[in-house]
Length: 268
Image (spheres, rainbow, N blue to C red):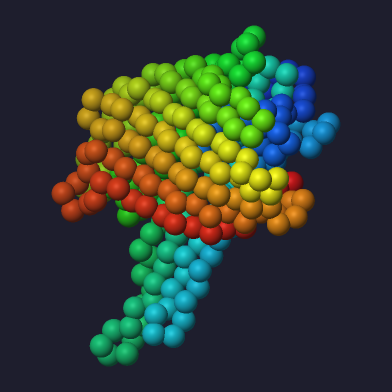
């Protein structure tokens, strides 16, 4: 059922005339419909698509052997009446353990996948929109091993300057999750999100995003602070710190997971 909802959202807004994306932050940061993955360059002239691929990896050897990889694909589709965005991200970490008898085994210590789709209908006033958002997270080692959400609501742009913008959105939603202990949890939520984007210089952009889903049994929060610098016309270097938090977790799990990353971003 959850996968069917996500496919339905991906097809939402499939009708309409294609148009180039608006540029509301100089020439470097068009408005994003999904706050946690804001594009940092404008959609090319005459094109209705913006796509970026992000990848970071760390490999260690010697006394400590292991590999960690993080990656994201962000595709945005701009049309005359709709602004849609589809995001897939993943992170895993694998370590090699040496036992007393000299044997070696590989243990997976982190594995998280996330898929989201958002359809936003542009209202008459510039910057205002009505949206439908669906997401699913599979986190093998998290407090919630599965977490799905569906939300509808209203978004607007509170601040629009040449180098800065602030977007907010709010609306009701529903979530279903399965904790690491196997407990099923679901219920209505209030979804709220905000994003600050600041073009620090012609080659550097800063963003701060926060998304909160408050329900009767759990409050789910995702926040990211990111700074990206331009390498050339299509490549960027991005440094980010993100945190995911749940108020209700099993006794053997912590409330907050954090991740610090340095990645290369390719836009096409």
